[in-house]
Length: 325
Image 1 (cartoon, rainbow, N blue to C red):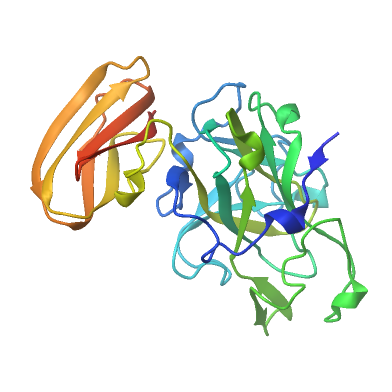
Image 2 (cartoon, helix red, strand yellow):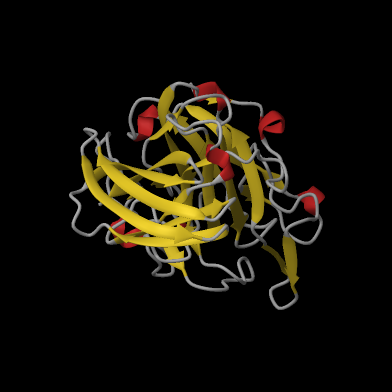
């Protein structure tokens, strides 16, 4: 039986609510990452998995799994790109189950937080629900036994009076009158990306997988964006957060980009180590000025696997992890 954590204790706006911790995982979908995602889960995947478990055709010819949408789409994301999933299946069949599963993430302490943004295509009629769950063992569907968040889906009702609608249990997007836009042409409210977050403190000392399961039946579309896990990277000293090292994209195919901030002008270098601790890359960047810096690194010649990148700057050594596909 799933352990449904108390939603009211977990959800809050990401604006000013999340401590400035290390980035453990980040995906903003600015570029289409889906070609690198695994289409089936084998239990121990180290990359993202995009799994269409129902194998039922879409009623409008859209992809059956989560799919990338560029630019504005139904007023949900007018600036950035995002990932979408459809529950409107051929012949209005129920049973939609689309799994978006993160790589494994090690949670070292109680500081870890998951944040994301999501929106349905429309609400209240045909509002799409979804479930955010955690597995502490592997990434098979049955192993996701802890529910962090439940978004409700439409069950019945019509018209503009929300009181006349019924929904499944969970958070109803737009019920409070926020993060929606009225579409006069269709007479429906269009969802706008809304920030959510959930504490991962309960998983301190464990390696976890997180899934975003689109499990709405015969509704329409749901969008997700800016999936972020922050926490404490093991091996960092107390000054690590003054640099704020992040790695993108992760997993990576050919290149990664380091983003970091220097509090003073000085020498910068980095080393890359494989999972066995062997140094596989090294570069001295010379002197860099104080402030925000970016560094692109070619990792195309590295073998597939997990790596640690060590940045040396400001008299501080900072580590971050990435996966090479």
